[in-house]
Length: 190
Ligand SMILES: [Mg+2]
Image 1 (spheres, helix red, strand yellow):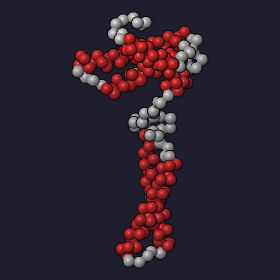
Image 2 (cartoon, helix red, strand yellow):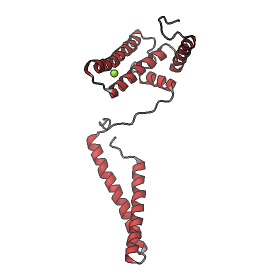
Image 3 (tube, rainbow, N blue to C red):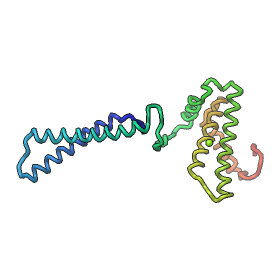
Image 4 (cartoon, rainbow, N blue to C red):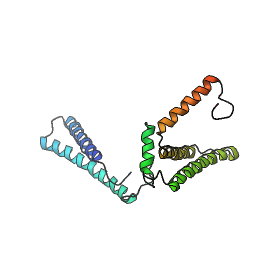
């Protein structure tokens, strides 16, 4: 969470506070057995709205103390949903620190390849600990698989392939092997 309160949050406080004030006025009028004066109702609605806004503001002060501008807090952030593998491929290009024009740069290509190899090793490390120590960190495995995907997709784009195109060819190959009964065995062209 950042220190900036959203406009939706302020609006929700005003509306919800107003509704609470109206409800309070209704309950009081029922108890009193007579309708309240309009200025009393307005006062309750406005007062409750201001009370909710004040509480929202105080909660925002806590955010500002824990999260200075530009600094991420440790509060968990909901993961984004990736529904298009080619958009993800473009994301890896845009996010690459070497810039989108780095595909011809041998050093950048080497970093991509080494990154893929290194992240694959991190996946292996998680699985090794499961076998050796009986400790399985499922959350870490998920993160490392994501890291592998990042370098994989970046390498796809570096060599001019769309990730969907690479996956599509792979699906065709695997289906063909399954249809011909050659899933097991060796050799990439079987
Ligand atoms: Mg990693």
